[in-house]
Image (cartoon, rainbow, N blue to C red; front, side, top):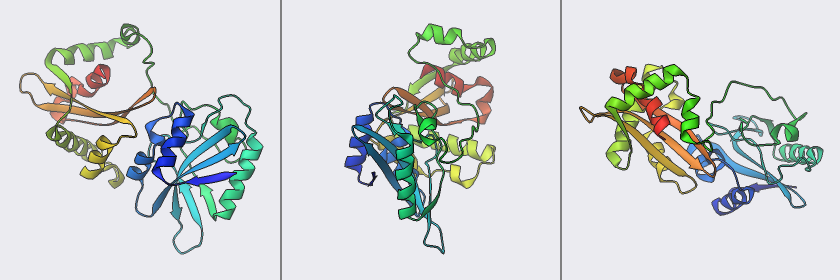
Length: 265
């Protein structure tokens, strides 16, 4: 059976039952990321004591009675409270197809999460799964000296140079966030990003105010001038920390402030 969840209280409750998720799956992030005309929903499939969750953004197809569904910016995909292979994938797919037919949903696209298990097993044969690129991660359970020992020589040189002349602190003031937004937008203009990457000020304020996850703004200051030369927003949820958005002052590009921020985080 497929259940549609739209209210925050139940959405939060279902994620809590999974135990280990990521901020991309949360109610707040879905409502923050949705565009005009998109409806955040959390689909829940139940099979005995086992459950599967699939968050989506539902959209009307203009001029028709049909809909399609996509995922948020980032990594979403499927969550399950059973990390074994006990769930009957064929029954899940049968229920999901029936739901899509009932709701006139004719296509679905989801970016699968690289660290959530059983997604490909549950989706195999339902559609096409393609690899779009590499995901870079650090195992934060390792001691910091072991993590840094695995950095290449060039990165170590960058970090040592930056650490001598820069300081990384947590941004706790409204002016810190405002300066970060300026640096982020400056970066987007420099790389000729599309309009969809130019998030407005409300987006940043809401992402930092959410209680669904733990956001953290880290900023890098030049020691001599105390000028903010870089910043990054990280978001923590359960045992995952995501490096979400960043920006730097082009005049200090050679100092690699973002690399220092990531290392300090």
